[in-house]
Image (cartoon, rainbow, N blue to C red):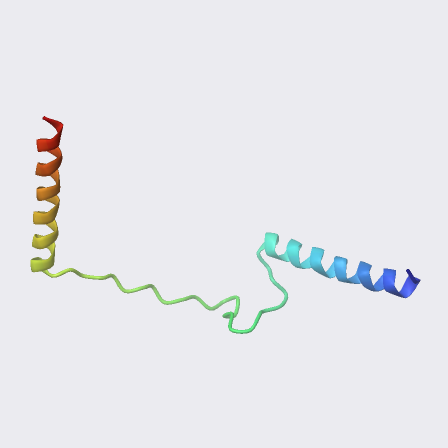
Length: 74
């Protein structure tokens, strides 16, 4: 292995270690494609709302499961 190859591999390793250090410190030096800037924050996701009818169906199904489990436990 020639010295230029060794130096190139050392430089690559140093770059990888610096990226790991930056990630651990929370300060990244480079952004990948499609990644937001450091100061950009994502909007809060919207909450999903169930209709009263849907909640009633879910409650009825759960009560049926509980009744089945109680019946099987006897």
